[in-house]
Length: 360
Image 1 (cartoon, rainbow, N blue to C red):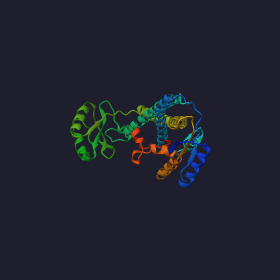
Image 2 (cartoon, rainbow, N blue to C red):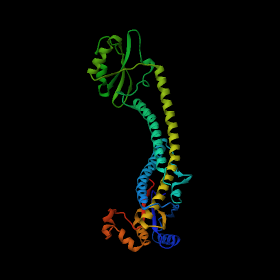
Image 3 (cartoon, one colour):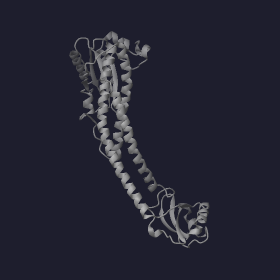
Image 4 (tube, rainbow, N blue to C red):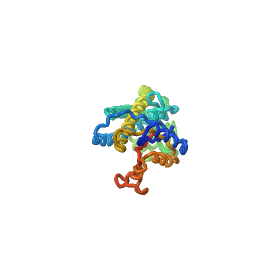
């Protein structure tokens, strides 16, 4: 599927079917690798010139907004599928592929409808990201360095001594200072139980040691340890708290999975709705700009093409060749000797209506 299309309208001088046949013939002869499709535009009410000019401006703004929402939802789908390890599914609109919908296929209320979808997307993504953020915070605590991580899963009941007079405290010792710790911890304060320090865990930066001492000198030990570059971590072993943390983590994981699945399904459904609205805007935009460009009554051929990058210039030449030659000179850029650049300075001006539809 192409990621970028051109929506184009050409002025019809005699017969739309004759012009369509000519376009098909030229494309097949000179740019056969360019997909070409009719873009069926409904019969819309023309109104006044002022209303068309205002509509043209409004459609351009709304088209940009709706295109942006479409891309937001598509990117959200890609991110969710990547996190979930799912195989990327083809996006659909009303049950058909994006490519088929664009190539086969009033304004009031569409912008409002898409704005509501975007608001819903923000709420759903925020809810999902909130749970995801809580999980990431827990995972950082469980996988970070010993200076910050949760120690409950590293300490066993038999590692802790708690009595009327004795307490066990946990010390975080830099790896390069372990010899210093082992030779000095017994003398950091009085009433430290000799040979009571035991290493429980080690990561790339620190080692986790226990030490047992009299509870009344614990504060003195903390102060002396800090002065020597050792960190004493506050820790209270509680099987109930550990079980609660485990249950909380399991619930968050389940909530995240449910929210991700729900958000992904919502994104698939909403993408089709937003893309459909976008194509309605493209149809109205082609109609309005064709009237402003070619005049009344409406007489133009609308089509969708998907030229390759290297074939773009050739396709432009074919399209220009099917327009009035006198009109074509007027719409050439300044470098090509035309006068359009003096009016709007649009380097992409053409003697026919043309704008891009970027799917990705």
